[in-house]
Amino acid sequence: MFDFNSQGLTLAGQDILSPIQLSFHPGETHCLLGPSGCGKSSLLNQVSGLIGDDDSARWESGKPQIGYLFQQPRLLPWRTVRQNLLLVEPDQASVISMLEQVKLPSIADHYPNELSLGMARRVALARCLLLKPDIILMDEPLTSLDLPTAKEMRGLIKRLVCDHPQRSMLYVTHDLDEALELGDVVSVLGGTPSHIIYSAPTDEVSRIELEALLRY
Image 1 (cartoon, rainbow, N blue to C red):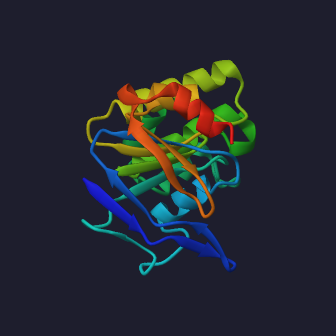
Image 2: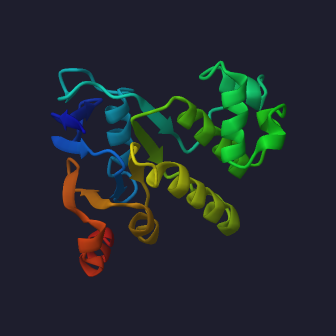
Image 3: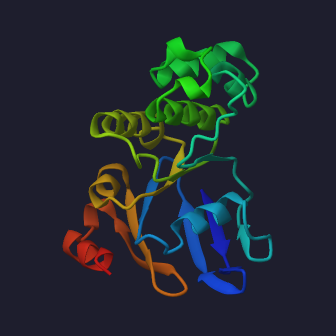
């Protein structure tokens, strides 16, 4: 288990987040809901270490290996899919095996501009998993995908991440049904500065209370 302890987050003189504590248990998916602009992405960025510093946030039990799946795939356009993945995993066989797991074995030598958004997101998921992370952060990975593509991506996330006994995940979404399907724990971020205003195991969640919180 990894424990994350944030003392809050201030950006450009504005308090964005209140102190937040998160525990990441092996095999557990924690889904984070909240209105746009409430600080969900800022929390992911603080957990990843992209923003903040050791004085404002720290890992109590040693820093884990973290993989981050952004909304934008962030693939290098001048490199093929294979070359992008080889940047994080130099073993060719492992790269091809991972492409097979995300159902894209035939596009290894394609460039990012030849891929649909759904395909590019699957490549980004493959890159994330090749890092062999302890914790995976996902920032609304189904945004802007059509329904069949989103369903396929959600299935991959469930199989490769949620059902993995050692991988923990912090998953940001605005979709309550998505959170209840994927999450073992569901939390809501809100308030000013933002803090966790509701959190419960999925099998104990009050849907009525969650829907009321998300209307504001």
